[in-house]
Image: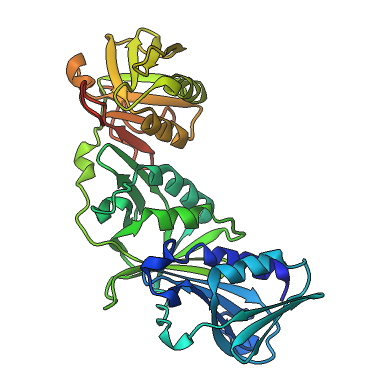
Length: 397
């Protein structure tokens, strides 16, 4: 096989190996290599499959190869990926010699001890396909929503992206209780009347979304009746990712999404983000970023408690009463980074200024729907919406 193709496949599969090997069975640190004649191979014309499985996520990557003898071997995963990456850019020959895997590439020769294949668990099958989604659109939506997912493993469902599947489209939502991100996108179902809810680990979806691929579509498979646990499958350009879904009750986020806003602020997205980054240099957990909105401007200011202070005035479109609100700058930057429009809109729902700055602010793009002013109509289901809880005075959120 060609070294570049083999290196790409082993490197991609190795990223899905357990990150803390000492806490998992040693056998799961291996990469499974399955070689078969192209006509009868597990992927048409593939020749070789590179597989990884940590009992939660399984991946398969096909590699075009001329197979002389079919077989299956288990090899130390990260070691193999490092070796293949170091090889010259030419043809690689792989063979088994007793209890070792032998790799030859030009004048280079490596031998790697094989692992016990008998203890390796059976990889799950790819779930029955239910539809397809545009690769770039899906990647963009995941990139917008994933930053809002929680990192606290003690509440597993909050580390997931909620995927709502219906004939109208896909809705992705994530929250860590301090912010909420929601995005709806179209897709092409291949089954009648699709409807399902899937809580997918955010880190897995994020990995799929940022992996380069030449495929224009991602195939989605779903099996909610698997005795070993419900699973979602994503396949693009022959590569498969199969992930066990997370159990739990996701918060009823829809009741938090307002249809109108009493006050709206519109600013240049890039300029506002740049100002937040500058001022946040002296922001701290106990002295976060303060936004003070007055007519046609907002003042961003922060201090670190030691005397260092910063402030910056940013022009905006705003004509309401003075509003003063505290935000976590990192959370705000995540939201601004997800806005695809040149202009971002921050909506404050309540008419009373004190109440408006105590309730979640709604961030969206100016031209992508989202929360509208009074009488502006319903929320655009396709809009990206990012709800951000303000920090209460004296809290340490």
